[in-house]
Image (cartoon, rainbow, N blue to C red; front, side, top):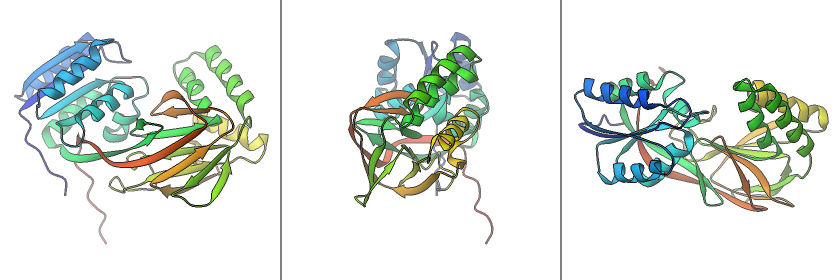
Length: 295
């Protein structure tokens, strides 16, 4: 059963150059923590100061480190804290906010913080690792990863940029299939692979100790176009050419470097990559778990 921790001392890091965070958000953070009677220090920083402030906040050993920033900063905070460090609250202050939305839902960050300060529970946060890089929500490997930047441009209303990125993604489709093996099993081929942590999976419980592996294998240009459209406006996991399994380790090979998206951030992986599940990356302050349905 999750534990309700005692929170008295808080360090907060607000990346004022990240997405929706701002100096005004840092002021709101200070007000909210004061309203809950907490001893708090808020760092409003940007650029190279962010990493140094995260390190200082965690080294201060508070009861909680609240991070209002993007997914990259949230991931860095979780890695710095580790499983034995202070609790982390990764709040939505970036552009995509994949990790905060997976933990707290899509509401405003200050509402999420107020909720967990009042009723939050300690929960372990697992994650994946690919080629030495962590992901706490999802990793997409292969050509469909190139649709992610187009989707974000579309969300931001930058239509011409989205169309340019769509053309680039389309020209890369079928440019090189991936070979893969899950948990040391037989090798297969696919256009792309996605690995989702339990916190983001629709078929796994949050405390499952594995990754959801989605094998994306469209048969022809029509199916590839359908997946591309799903990546823009819906959930590509619903496409019939996507098969979902679970695994703890995977190997992926390609003829050249592999395009990828790790927690919403584009990456280029070498031609051979290993993916692993890590059961305990950090401890988070999360909303209380929903009660189990009656038998």
